[in-house]
Amino acid sequence: MAIFSNLSPHAPKALGALRIVSSLLFIAHGTQKLFAFPVGFPMEMNGLFYAAGIIELVAGLLMLVGFQTRIAAFISSGTMAVAYWLGHAPMSPWPVANMGDAAILFCFVFLYLVFAGPGAWSVDKD
Image (tube, rainbow, N blue to C red; front, side, top):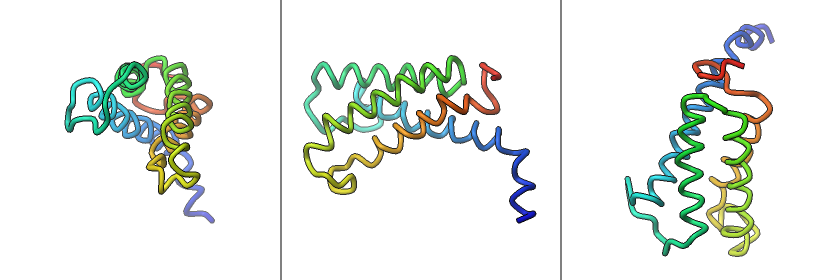
C-alpha cells in the first residue's frame, strides 16, 4: 500500500523511539532492584538480582543515550534470557502465568537493537 511506503523514511526515528522507551523501562527495573525506586523489589535480593540490577541500570543508560548500543543491547538481551529461564520459566511454561512476558519482550527488543543499531537521536550514529 502506498500509505505504508511513505513511512519508510521515518524508520530510523521509530527505531530511536523504541530504543529510548525500552531503555527507560529497563532502567526502572534496575533502579527498583538497586534503590527500591520507584517501588521496592518484591523479592529478597541476592547476588543475581544485584548483578541484573547493575546491568539494567548501566546498559539501560548506555542504550538510552545511544552509546555502545549494540554491545549494551547484546548484554541486556542475554541477561533477560537468563532471567526468563532461571526466574520465570520454572514457575510455569506459559509466560502470562509466570510473569515472564516483560523479560521475553526485553530480550527480543534488545536482540533487534543488536542487529538494527541505535536509530535516530543517538551518540553512536551508526
